[in-house]
Image (cartoon, rainbow, N blue to C red; front, top):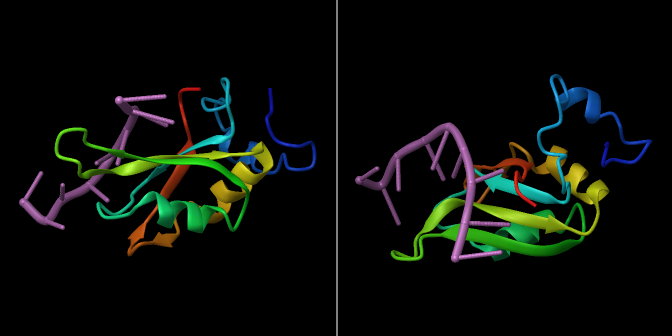
Length: 107
DNA sequence: CGTGAGCGA
């Protein structure tokens, strides 16, 4: 059930205080929140590609107003890169705001 | 609201 490597289970005992709610299907998709309303996918990918290889980066914007909703999704090539980027980029300063990185619910 | 918890087309 663990998506991490057998050597990277250190994060497992840290967050899995109750249960794994993110490891239902995918562990490579990360939910990025706390972003600025002006942050683009380029800023996210440039910041996350330093910790792992990015497959796809998407910023959720309003389909009517076109303004950013303030959050997005990042797809990594492996769970290892996603986990490392999660621990390293979670709560960091990006675009002048604190980013909140978490695993995506859907897959 | 020029905002601030959340989970997309």
